[in-house]
Length: 332
Ligand code: ATP
Image (cartoon, rainbow, N blue to C red; front, side):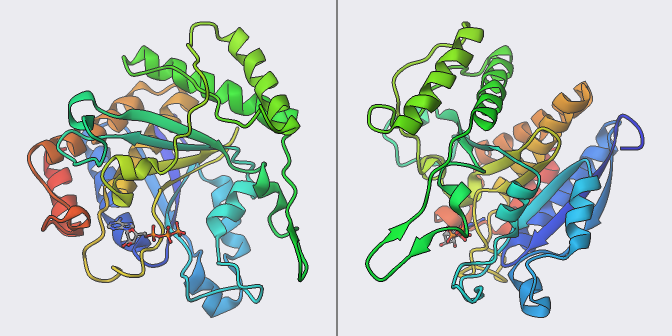
């Protein structure tokens, strides 16, 4: 960062619909630049299945270096089901970045935007506004590439450490507090299996200790919040972030959607909202109110577009990538 409000953003558009949803997010950020005191320098870099096909690597060293130096990382989507390593796993530079930069907090917000249909009965009246925070470097992920498979059985070892858990809980309580301060729900729930596994009892114990340090957040039993993207309209609606102490990657929840790539059908909303999350993270990290406002402005523009009746092809409407991008830009 050269000035307090000038940010260098690493852009990894990736494969499939990744570049298609990245383009509108770019335009939105360019427009934000014109409307605020924020400035961005974008540097694009290769990563993903197509890069692997061309070079034999998921991403070059230069991409990792760029991500290290940048203020934040925007990622489209990486990997294609048809392109695999010799052991038949997919090319996932987004997961490699998690380990490389210790991005322990996987932040997956699910907010039902008014006007977007949800399969949950009553959600249109009562709303949905929750964030799933999943630890992204440990648990079974710690076993990535180390699993042992024989003819008769397969074993992967789950790891939970005090260091990562305590950082994760502090991050989560802080996020809950920041949300609450903005008038949004702020209860934090620990999802575990402490009644069965010792490792999760250890996890729960550390959560309870963190909760005692943050008495203002309520807690209630364990609920499972999976498939949250499904609750809020579809894959194309859901933003996400993988956050560490120094680095963070912002990308939509969805993958490369090879079934719709190149057809102008991809819904760029999740990518655009990921860019808004990036602004919020930069705002918090650098104490920059104008970036908080810019992130909220993007969210409001998206809300307006859906309130005005846009309907992505993803859930049966006729609006493709370009329509949605144009509408969000106009609403901004
Ligand atoms: P990954 O494993 O990489 O996360 P995936 O196998 O879960 O990917 P996606 O690529 O996310 O699959 O696609 C799942 C389904 O959702 C596909 O039918 C796809 O067309 C649809 N989909 C995903 N993203 C979007 C989007 N932005 N707009 C419209 N439809 C989408």
